[in-house]
Length: 184
Image (cartoon, rainbow, N blue to C red):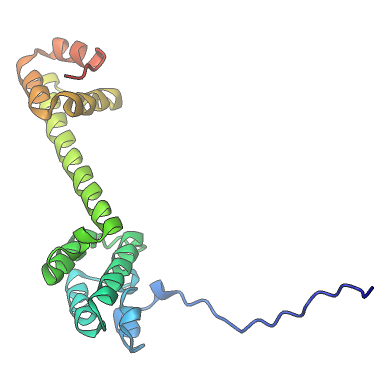
């Protein structure tokens, strides 16, 4: 019986490229639309620059399927956002304008867009109802009161909560928010 010897492993040399440390010009100079998906990570990413990138991807991708994959990767990179550029919403609009609903038809991206829109709507509702509460009581709602306001808006609709915030006196409003939420 022969002795066991581990096989020799030959690894190709590799290097890690911190794409977020590059500018859009440096990524563009690499000569492939693939590198353009990393532009939201670039130090100098702006809405205007991304508009040009979306156009370049549109023109440079070989097929509609490749374009969809490149746009998906572009949006994933925009979600990472190491510099705090906050370009996701604008980028989604740019791609949707160029591709007429492509992202919404892409299952994972479509779901992400819908979820983000819902979170945005919920945030707007929370801000509006929080301001109404503050006007009625003279103070901002506590975290628990804010949660109750949102729970009630989800269960009964924002209109019913808005009515309570406008109609109930301060102490009655606070008692109402402390009660358990009932689904209608």
